[in-house]
Length: 341
Length: 289
Image (cartoon, rainbow over all chains, first blue to last red; front, side, top):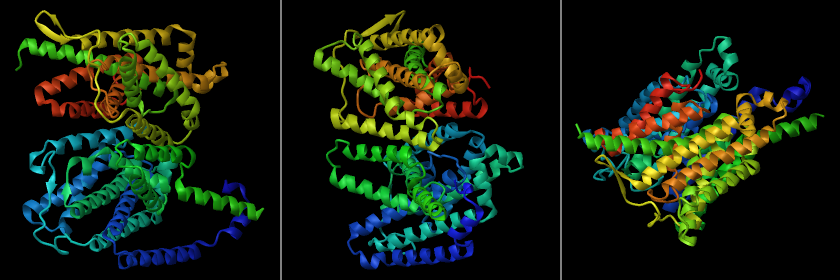
């Protein structure tokens, strides 16, 4: 533990916060510039598509992490928000000609509203109970959409390709989707960063680490969990909306399945729960593993990719529960303490 | 309104499937009660039990009813070893690790079943119990009837074991207070392993009972895990008697929902009941507050 080391040593090894912030901002900017240049370099549509998938997975991980990582409320039903976002944007566009620029945020708001009801009813539940309640809610939502004729029921919905361009967010190329996904990821990271830096971040940590102590000093837990859920569900649904306009086809298994909820949580866990960039790192690793194992082992229909996927989940959960970034931080702390000694 | 015959027949089939749900849920509730870990791979224990019956039938022509004790023993050993080799490491881990370890196991077992036993639907064609039973104008499938009775017998057996034997008492003591039990000389690691063994055996036997009339495939556990969660919550986490009655209630809600709303809404209705119980009586019907 770092608290065991004398204060003076900490000051020697850890740069002052302002300098660290400046350095981190410079790194972030550099990464962003590189990310923005990717479509200029990568021309193969399938590779660019892979990049879009990574960005979208990262964005969902970041959104999940706000509730699951920062506020410590493990949701295994985020697919419901994703699905509501994608169906709302799609239905508004198909039936009323409303541009996705309005439809996607509208889906976000609707999901956040549903999140409000979910939070109001479920935030008193602790631990596993909350997780199981979110599974049940997502399952009910999926059954609902499976039987709702207006939303295409089990057949799903196909977006018409009559018009293309930025107004309708339908493109023939992958680069445009890449920039949209990158923009949404940056937005999600910005929201997450703002929360982490504001007074809310402290409350979230208190709720997660010491719920009883937090309550005893007058931190109203529910309202802060509710804020986290609001941001998390809104951003998840935005991701759903973008998914619909990228794929141009949605149905309950593709946008509402429990597996989707797991993936969102898994990106965050793999990279580092409760860290800003953890879900991004996790999404890169997870997508690489998924696509890699599918290319190498999949297609045989014999579940080899499932087995590999499962072994990674179990390995991370048991041996690296703090994820890649958590592991790196731990190592850095150990080294710093070693050097100070 | 459906006719009385149909109604009675539906209710009876609801009770019979409910008894199976109860048995699956009792396994889950024992594991949870003794060591506070929710086992997301519980449905896969049931799947393995089904395949055990299937292969013993397909390879050695042994009847599923005869092989039940063998299935139970195999699953006990499986659960026991799973604890000793893997779950042991997450006994005191954060909840996130626990959830994702058992979740990973769920995917792993499904993947392994697909790999070794193919994703096909399989069934046991000529078991010793076949056909239908007629009681006062009500028709009920004989396999379902036997499975229901079998589930009751095993449930009573488990209950007797927990309440009448020294090991059962030690399990209960560990469930009530791990540390106090340890001070009394009870090896809690052994109790956890036994709980996983019994939990897996319950699900395995339920799978064996189902194997005569339910399709057997790698993802079959998915049909039961959500329902088992509902039953465990409804009955109160850790309560065997609670799980028994809750299983019957869930079975009845399911078939009545199917009859009145249509089969596609069965599960939604059961899950709605689950949420309602979570909201208003989180300790379950028979659980202690």
